[in-house]
Length: 310
Ligand SMILES: Nc1nc2c(ncn2[C@@H]2O[C@H](COP(=O)(O)OP(=O)(O)OP(=O)(O)O)[C@@H](O)[C@H]2O)c(=O)[nH]1
Image 1 (cartoon, rainbow, N blue to C red):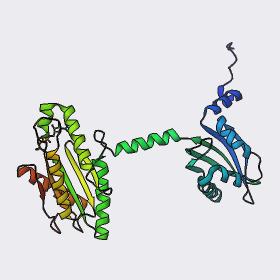
Image 2: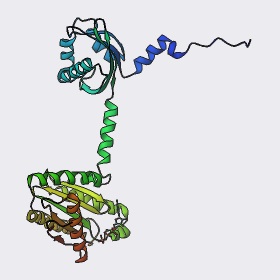
Image 3: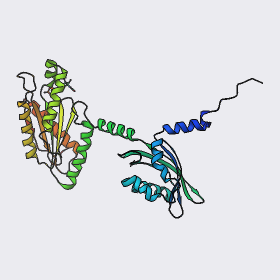
Image 4: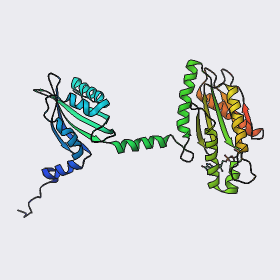
């Protein structure tokens, strides 16, 4: 027979290694019990020191509801709802809760627990993990996916969704809605003459200048390249046109730090007509912008979207 060294104990069988590992998990493993009278008990708990310290006083209390309420504050209701739903359907608990455990400011926790029936009621074995960093990263990515990196404005993708939503509200309630499409004139020339870095600065300055003239409910987006869109809810065409003219003038007066060279924009304006789609609104405002370019740039063109057109 082959002579072999006896196998070393597997780390998963080594209790102290497992415990040390558990201490490094930013959360706790727990057992929760709900008896037939609805009382909640916490018979077992282990994990990261700070969280364990906060939850340990609950161990072996006859009914932890009151103490949990004190500990979790506003989040207590949500926690109990998740537990009661799981108890009723015997379904796993899988939720995220914002809990003030072990921290002065609440953190996001992921709560995963499996219920099973026992003689005394229902028993959950579960894991509560601090996912504050993960949630912050998700929020950052969500923000980035809807934001133009250069100007910090809403990007095309997010704006198109917004136009759909606001247009369908206008359709339902008959409220006025206008859209502006703003495009820099001969922007390629600015890049070619003063460099792309300065071109970037011009785009950012235009974004800031336009933003400073808006109401809170208006939405400005960079649609790409040197094109911006401005969505104006509750705004009839006449007021949208006035705003477009003001914007155009203020941009042409602005000193962008490129000598005597003026930066100008062409603007298409369109208002939403009930019964039409957001795609038709977009198409019309684009046609108006093209018309402004063709007529010599540095101007605003507004044409009505004929009812029933496609
Ligand atoms: N600086 C800078 N330039 C960009 C960016 N994105 C696109 N561009 C440039 O913007 C220019 C857009 O030019 P065109 O679409 O040809 O139009 P234009 O020169 O503005 O001329 P008209 O629109 O016809 O008046 C191109 O030179 C692109 O390379 C950017 O993020 N930064």
